[in-house]
Amino acid sequence: MQTNPRELLRKYEYNDMEVVRFMREGVHLVGVHDSPPCYPEKIKAASLTKQDLEDSAVWRRKAIIEWVETSDPSHLRHLEGTALEETDMGFIEGPFWSEREVSDYFGHDRWMVVRRFVLVQGTEQKLRPIDDCLEAQLNMGFTSTSYLKLQDVDYIASLALKVAEAVSTGQQRHGSGEWKGKCLDLSKAYKQMGIHPSDRHLAVVYFAGEDGRPRFYVANSLMFGSTAAVYSFNRVSRSIWWLFNKMLLIPCGVFYDDYPLFSPAELAEDSDASASALLDILGWKHARTGPKGLPFSQRFQVLGCTLDLRHVPQGDVVTENKPGRLDRIREQLTRIKQAGKISLHEAQILHGLLRYSCGFFAGRHLFQVCAEIVNFMSALATSRRANVSDFCDYAADMLERSKPRTISSAGERRPILIFTDGAWESGVSGLGAVLVDCATGESHVLSGEVTGVLIDHWKQQVGEQLICQIELYAMVAVRWQFRKLIDQRRVIWFVDNEAARFSAIKGISATTTMRALVREFFSFEAESLSFPWIERVPSASNPADGPSRNSPEEVMTLLGVDACSVLEHPAELISRLIQSSRSLKKG
Image (cartoon, rainbow, N blue to C red; front, top):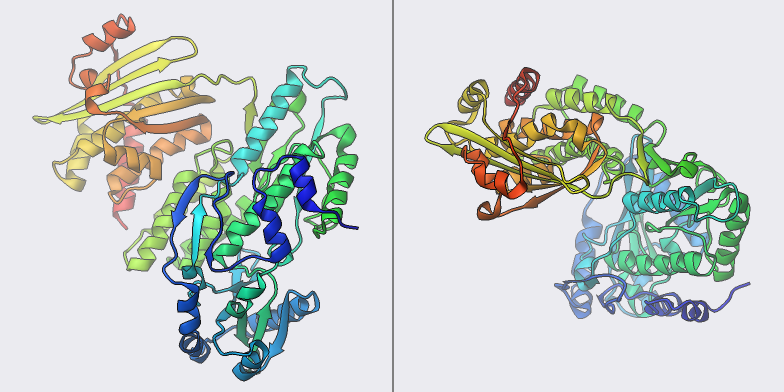
């Protein structure tokens, strides 16, 4: 049984009705779609037209087919098995054994070939077929008009926190107050959407089998690798999310083909059945059993992490890495350190495993580890040297310090404002900082100088130009001194030095002394969790400018602060910074 999705979406006032056309007529792979009102506008123009692709199709096809690739036999078997499965399900038509057969099928030879290959994902070595629409230049013919704002782990965690807040403050009038969740997954999601008939000749999948013979398949459904597929599918999957929320009243999010659902414990089974029934009515296949078809639970995996709802009645939500993730990362790091080198593929696997652990609500202490992995990828691309052993030791230490994060809906939301500044004039390394707690009205003004031991070390490493190191050190010193005040708080950092600001934002720097400072800044997040945001302040507007030059009187009067505090330089912090930069320098 199916129903008309247009009428449902109209009834519940969906704000992107073009998705109905995508489902009824198919998706154009080239050209331009309309600009949906539900996403911010961001135009990336195509560099080729449909006619350009058709006119050059014969020669591009020749180049792709004649390129001989040495493939793992298991990959070729996987491609053949996948193609057979997709043929049986109607996703593709074929096989065609020669170009002439495909030309006869279309009635012309202006058709494009898209090479299919196998991507090995994660430490589980999962094989995923990819259609290389970039190589085929198909993606160069599509103009995107929007920026896809996706509902990632942070969105889902904040939704869970909103539920916890409502329950703990008595807004749930019935039931025990216990909640459960699950992640509903669409099956072969892209393949459930069709290609517009006028563009099917641009989507001929090609690969050579174990016997070396070429195989061609005409795609009926969206290809995993097409830019147009990404934009159109996300718009359609968002319409399902809308109906879950508006029609079924199930709080949920959507991330591509995953739908994290939330329900009071007493209604969980009904919510599960209702969501499945709606998808059945609309004709969407989805997982009902197995790892992707689990029932509602108080602890469930979502987008690479585990969300724990057992403390929702008290207003708390717990996020942590999914089981086994950290162990797999540790094993990978051990192998890399023993080998003394890292490949691009290994770096990509590590980055994929870690990236979901670095959200706003999940915690930021592994963000810098991710940034260093990205730096490894860049180094491999440019043949630059990188200190693999130091990175593995550092990453392993950060992983050991990882722990589940409890987020309280009753936590203080008013931020702490922190202004920092550094000065390097006539050999004097001035430091200044101003803290304003918007919750309590408490203010601090601090002034000082960088300890001579650290200045001498920096000079040995980078020479006399130290202003960037001093500016970033001011942030690190404040983070150390006020770690108890900052714990579990939202913090807005204001920095007037761009090198220091961007190093802290990106979590990386090309300079070893700056990278050591960045590492230390993020290491505090393991024990003293915060919600940081780093922003720019012009020097002329920076209240920490005076204290950095030993002139704190004006800002003290402005804030009503009686005494200017001294910025501390504990021996432990200085020792860690020096040791870290020396270790990085060895690379």
